[in-house]
Structure formats: C-alpha cells, structure tokens
Length: 152
Image 1 (cartoon, helix red, strand yellow):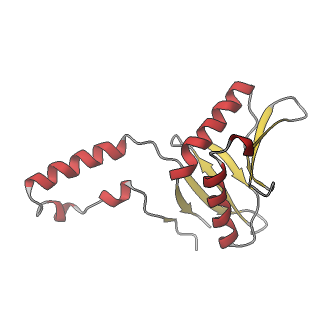
Image 2 (image 1 turned 180 degrees about the vertical axis):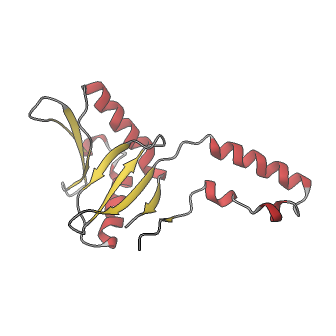
Image 3 (image 1 turned 90 degrees about the vertical axis):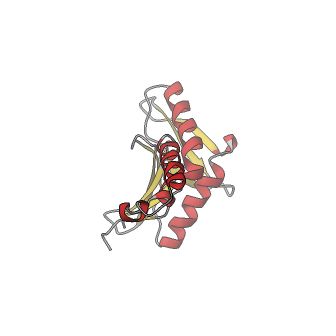
C-alpha cells in the first residue's frame, strides 16, 4: 500500500517512450515538443492523500511550489476522502465558503466549508491578513485542476 499512485494529469497524457518517438513522423515530433513546453509552463497543484497516526485518511492541497495551502479533516474511508477532495474542488471557487478567523495569538487563518456548513479543510497560520488572502487565492487557483497523489 505504501506505493505512490498518481492519477493522470494533462501533462502525463503527453509522456511517450523515447523508442516510440523515433517512429513518429517529423511533424508529430514538433507538435509533441510544443505540447510538452506548453504543459511545463502550467503550474499545477496536487492533493496528497496520507494516513495519519490514528490510521485515518487526510489530504493536503499543495501549490505548484510544494507548499501546503489546505489540510483536510480526518476521514474513515477512501471514498469519504475522495468526496472531500471533490468538495474542495467545488466549494473553493465560492468566496462565501471561506471562514476567515484569528487564532488566540492573533494570527489569521481560514477554513473552507462545504455547502452543508461542515469544515472540509483549514489553512496554516498566516503572518498577516494579506498573506491569508494570498492563501485563499492559491486554493482557488490550484484546487479545481489539481492532480491526486495517494500515499496512503
């Protein structure tokens, strides 16, 4: 179970073995190079699923730079975890679903809620309200098309 499983992202669709490329017509090789360049320049986030110490599943939404921008609640099953990811994809685009808060020490953070009001995930603590706003913008940008890596 410890093996990493990754769902196909758009970039993976253009992975072709070198021995297969040599048999392609020249025109196709040029198109393939253009597509690879185009997809390399598209930053993509990812959802990483893992088991916590209690054996429950959690996911982190990571930005294209690898920084965790949202951490989920704990789930008892893979199906529930997958539903949580889909809920983040859907609800991340609605400003009303973000609950902006301050910790006891005054640092801002946010949680993302589903349409039923249940918390789907929470952010890290931020140094300022503007950096929290950047975190929300990053969730909005990355969540809809983020790939999924299952490390459970």
